[in-house]
Length: 103
Image (cartoon, rainbow, N blue to C red; front, side, top):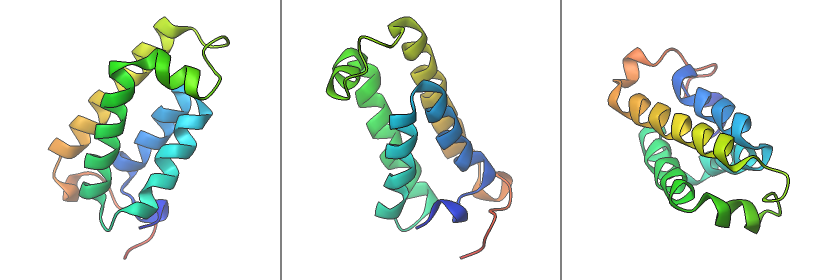
């Protein structure tokens, strides 16, 4: 699947990831190619984001971002991202908006 086929609500996950760090935006965007559909993609990135949320310092340290990141703000942005992913999953796909391109 390509990010062009995501509904606007699902695509907002990538925008919210960018608010946290551009590395996470790249990871979440690239992850789309690993899934056949939007719901599977959302479930996959939710698991990844929950893992980051459990140990944000480890994630930032892995990417050499720990020293330059306000950890309190990063945690807030990760929580907002997780909540948006969960809200998107709970929203019927027909109500998430029309994707830029159709499959």
